[in-house]
Length: 259
Image 1: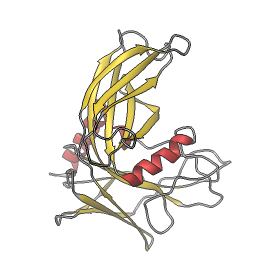
Image 2: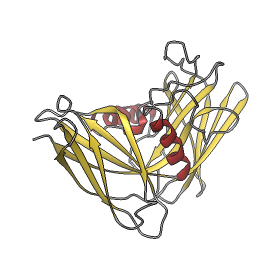
Image 3: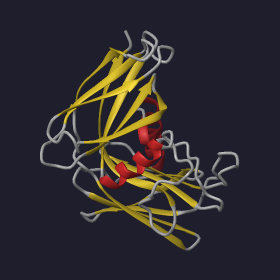
């Protein structure tokens, strides 16, 4: 598959499938010196996956991270595949052929000006969404979205839930686990005000099955207003002092329309 076809598929993915985590989180990092920021994802989808590389800025500076170009970026798996990523935009690198397969372990390696960074993530098996529906919230009579799914028993599971409205990712995400409900029905409720959920809007919910490192990372981010801000940065799974994360996760989704 040539690079033009890859880019074409990638752009279709952006427009039609709503790439959730492929979009860069709005980072507000607690840092007084510039550091490398890596945000990488690999999914169980049939489209290219993405790694974004940038440099942090001071916490009190404008929250625009300069892109890092010219990095050497590879992803390999535990069954012998190694993919060299292509830079399609400054700081944005995409895969050519490697696929996300639940149960497989993936290693990201990045080299920037002779300095090397790496991270490893194992992709959990996906969990289907049973149903998504609207409820009336007890807060100011607004709407809330209920997401129901059944947790697989006797396996430690971690989840991230992302909400899209009209093909645009909201800046909020939610993390949960099966710690208190192993093997049971999990109902997660997302509050929205009525101005956001007006009649006719399309709502898409993504249920990501993530590993424990990513659960801890996104939980720390969520506790700070669903973004990475002071007083502390979430603990990265990337080596050599880089900020950010590398996540191999499986995804299932459902779409509903606001009545």
